[in-house]
Image (cartoon, rainbow, N blue to C red; front, side):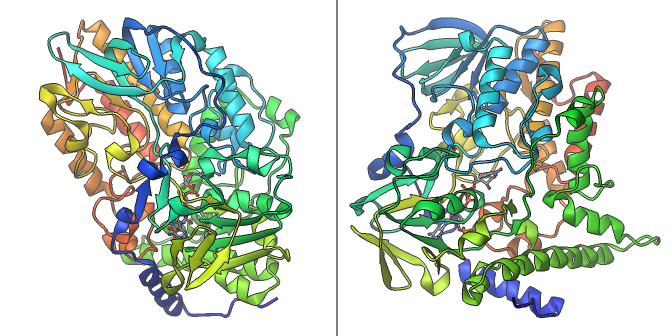
Amino acid sequence: MATISPESPADILARYRAERDKRIDAKGNGQYVDAVGELARFGDTDPNATPRIERDPIIAEVEVLIVGAGFGGLLTAARLKEAGIDDVRILDLASDFGGTWYWNRYPGVQCDIESYSYLPLLEETGYVAKHRYAYGDEILEYSQFLGRYFDLYPKTSFQTAVTDVHWDEKAQRWQVNTDRGDRFSARYFMLAVGRVSRPKLPGIKGIETFKGHSFHTSRWDYAYTGGDTHADLDKLGDKRVAVIGTGATGIQLIPRVAKTAQQLTVFQRTPSSVGVRGNHATDVDWYKAQKPGWQEYRRALFLDAASGLCDDSEIRDGWTETGRILREGKPAHPETPEEIGKRAMMADIQVMNGRRQRIDDTVKDPETAEKLKPWYNLFCKRPTFNDEFLDAFNRPNVSLVDASGDNAITEITETGVIAGGKEYPVDLIIYASGFQVIGKVGQRVTFPVKGRDGVMLEDHWGAGMRTLHGLTAHNFPNWFYIGQGQNAVAANYTTTVDDQAKHLAYILTEAKKRDATVIEPTAEAEQGWLDEIRASNKRPPEFYENCTPGYYNNEGKGGVTIWAESYAPGAAAFNALLKKWRDEGDMKGLTLR
Ligand code: NAP
């Protein structure tokens, strides 16, 4: 196998820039289309729905109404219950708990964060995770288990779509209407719909004209492919399949499709970095020997190790690699910001050279190996981890099409995919094209949210999120946002939402103690937080601008990016800040009435 040529860092950075320039699309996020109108079936269908739940409309007053039955909603309900707030109603379009794990059941679906950190409340529930990296079906079952554990099923209405929500100033409550004719009047309203709940499709001409079969990965059609998340897709033996997209989802499903399809053509625009997975069954003796408090310790350790703030030997995985190199190479003398920046760049190049070398070591055809190499800084795109993906390209039935730059996909015809002027006839097109992570609020939240004086959330956040601590917004009294945003974006989503849920439980408990029924941040506090998180962002804007486009950097358009809008010092610092805020005891920035 070829060995990566010892290119100079300057050459590598020049290559990064060229690869980025090739992929920039002037339309930014506008290159994508929502699964609506003619494309509605890509998002509206639910292949996993249970038979329709017939029920009468509910007309009720509740203390807390939560939209979203994924980990955000589950943890909010669980932490509120712990705090003695039990009058809760959860609504979700799905037929069960699970959120993203309910919808995403594509073959090979697995979590990239180790289960001992990702699966929340393990100590409380005594659950023993099966593997170091849990498969999607286990996470889905665990979500359902949590639903039972906290007795949330009777409080949850599934197969229910919220149609509109508004703050009733006179009643000082949220009025929530649904497509089942429900009318809830809620003191508190929590939006916990996640950031990867609305599928997006590439805005390629002709998607609706394709006469074969096609679906988005979050609506996998096993009736067509056969198999399940683990078992072979046994109906693909006579099918020519196209997969469009090689993000975290594409990487996991491609080896599984490759195994049984008559022919698989992978359309890759930007290669993912694919690190080692190294999954294994849980050593139950090790697990059971953990001391009380182990999970909180491990979760914090994971985030610190990934940031290079502590030794990672207890937890070492692909997320902690760069942090380890940086920590171990730290000189004794204090460094200037330039020295830190240079060392960080060299560490990144070292890690990415390793990723590129792995491709050369695995993929036999040198041309395919070249195409699979990622040329950008590791955290320009979400890193992926897989031990079967690269090897899939050694199979005779699998081919890789570079769909970047001049070779872009330009059309979907009745019979196939046109890229670089060539038509690839296929029977099945699988869109692994992701979700509206950075789309406007209205592309992620399907119902209007109207705050005080008719202020629409979509307008309030028109130029990006505005919150106090990522949780509450001015003009939206008693309204709380659960998820990643203007808190600290961390690799482990469930720590973020659990920390948020605990903080929220504190706020509601304090409000009760102080006989307050309305909580709202002041406009000044909201602006202050926005200023603080922007000031906290030490990475120069060029870092994002020089990255290959994607949802991490607003598709290379600059402006509001996910990272630039979160609290850069990280989860531990953010939690310390919130703890200090709580300890001060004056609910600074919130008005309580
Ligand atoms: P994604 O990361 O947004 O990837 C979408 C893919 O589609 C990218 O490879 C993108 O290429 C490609 N694409 C879009 N338009 C295209 C076009 N016109 N032609 C060719 N390719 C096109 O979506 P995802 O893979 O579903 O992942 C979404 C998020 O879900 C992840 O980032 C992660 O947070 C989460 N997730 C986690 C796990 C896990 O823990 N294991 C697994 C799956 C997903 P470009 O890169 O060039 O834009």
